[in-house]
Length: 235
Length: 244
Image 1 (cartoon, rainbow over the protein chains, first blue to last red):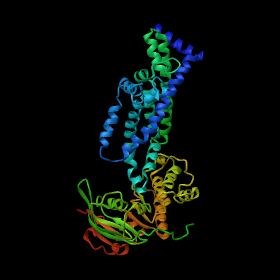
Image 2: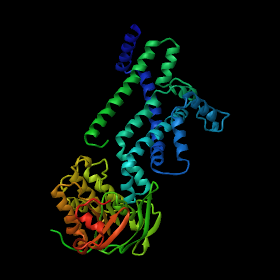
Image 3: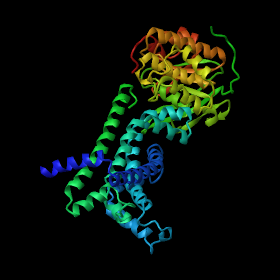
Image 4: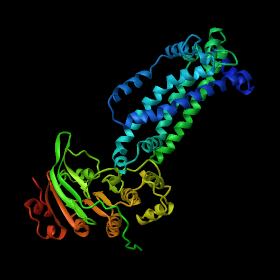
């Protein structure tokens, strides 16, 4: 109980004293997760929509593949990216091992399947409704994809949030390819892992509380948006 | 006040349907159907439920696969250019999850039609003036159907396909939609509509196609059809009897 109270006190202290190290870690976490999420969305949203609205040979295989990849173990992804970008790996010449770039690549591999699979499920539902109208209007594929994504925007927010959740809470892959280097690749989750191993539980818990607060705030905003959208029957 | 000015429409008529057969999940929905739809006509497609009327309309619009036979528009097979000059209003309107104006903007964008003023005028014409910001799916049944028709009008179609456009609508919406159908016909559009409302068919149609069990039993001038139907099925249908 004391540990929990200490943790809360510590987290408040860290936040309200504007602890420099904490904010550096927090900003790097948000930056790495944010960029990974943005790039995953740029790939995953159109791809998921395309899979939902188009019929082609092998479509089911793609869907099964992306569904399976949703459960990819982060450490395995971390290891693969490590092997690819380490000095002796095929992309060693890039020199990105133990940099935020390598962490972003690992997170993109982890998040994209989530974005693709969930988007595909959402768009498949809405496409049942719109299919005849779009066919009748002879809507070109690229305009249809944009329209589907726009009209499913409130449900897509949930997908984006799921991707963000996976990215911000991920530790296995980023610790392997990032190396948890202070002031360079140290993020919230790797710091929690480090502080726990050092026995500094109150600091680890304080960081955990901050991490949870971010998740809670984002979820709260999303729920408010969805309630407002439901009232206008946009969901 | 509406002014009759014939539009410069791409000529898609006559629409020739020759030995058209359509299968849906192995069921024969249209069975060697043949008919001809004249330029600038209002053709009412009538018949009992499940006779194949809606599928007939959808097939003309290119929404279902043809298993046998053919449809030509002024001797040309259906293609995207032809389909771009058709507009279809579905029995249950599909409205985008946006407001009224954005629903119109979407069609305007897809069809490369420009004009805020055109959209404004069409919305006014269908009685939806001032509804721009209203979420489309919160409209009443009649308003939804009128918005659906407004989107179709934005296309300035040469062929307007209407699947039971006034089913279950209030008298105001019904009257307004019928007026617009007549106006579009005067402008030069060819209109094909399905309906169960015999009074409406009499009011609007110049020609009748009577369907039963996936076959066309009669295609004739509307006056002749209602005065003296040729088949016993059509007689029964007009008299409100059940067709077995």
